[in-house]
Image 1 (spheres, helix red, strand yellow):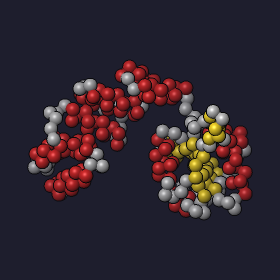
Image 2 (cartoon, helix red, strand yellow):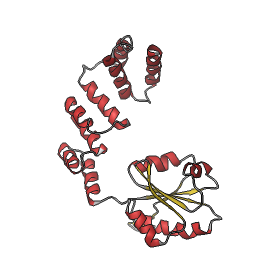
Image 3 (cartoon, rainbow, N blue to C red):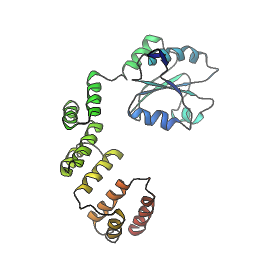
Image 4 (tube, helix red, strand yellow):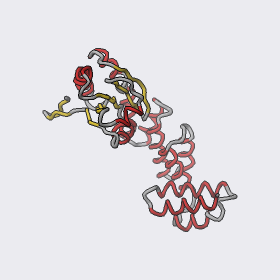
Length: 244
């Protein structure tokens, strides 16, 4: 257990089939997660569990531990194709980056977890992105030119400053993702006259089938509206019907 101001804080969480996506995959986009697959009847699991707790608690939140009872959560063990337990996997940014099976000694577990810890440069980049001003974000990109969080933050900042073309140039450096796509849509939209979304979509729907630019504008508007806007699903259905 780690302590903060006298309060004991554990870096471990119990994860189920239902919570795995949120507690492990989504969380791993910002913090590495070690997944410990165990069962109450497993002797070696009882040896390894406290070691994982100790080593990961000592990271102070830089690494999280997700405990999975395989008897109660078969879907997770099937996804990892587990043959025997204990089985341990490291998840970083949504991907498995390392793993082992069996009750490793503390020194080996420490080495395993150490590979997941952010470097001094990683921590500096994270601090610069949190600062969020243009100078800090550009400094972050000097340290890591392909850092998505810094690029998206800078693009959004440029868009808000009426520099949409520059924002698009920055975003072009990295592969498309949900965040990149949304930032690019905002940048492109900033270059067009502001108008009511429904009016714009109504004008564009008649052009989308034969006009690539109109179709891109249509999709950009839907990106900006987002999935929570009840109009988005309706307009997507209209787009599909018109295209196919």
